[in-house]
Length: 107
Image (tube, rainbow, N blue to C red; front, side, top):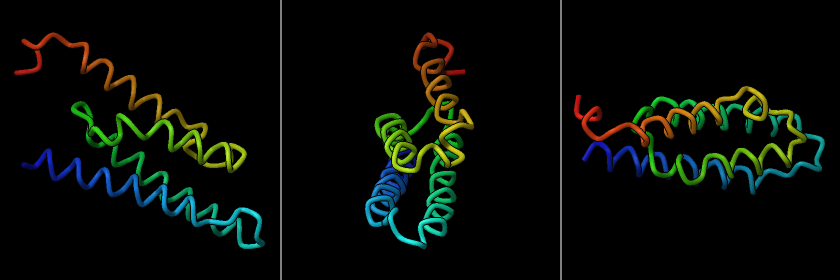
């Protein structure tokens, strides 16, 4: 039940990030303010996904890389998540967990 709740929460966080990204206009004078808010939001999502390790969250597994890639492309790579390696860190940890033998996962 807790895992299901975390998955729902993770999905809603990612959907919220997509929504925030799609609503933000990057061609306005307030784009610096929007970019700062987007940076904070994206870092929050990354931290949420990283805290779910080693088990991970399905929404992070499926959407995190695409979300960060899309947002970074739209912001010329100027956000923290574009260069801090946290996305790769998440997927490396997930791959290691998935590849572990089942006998070790019960310990």
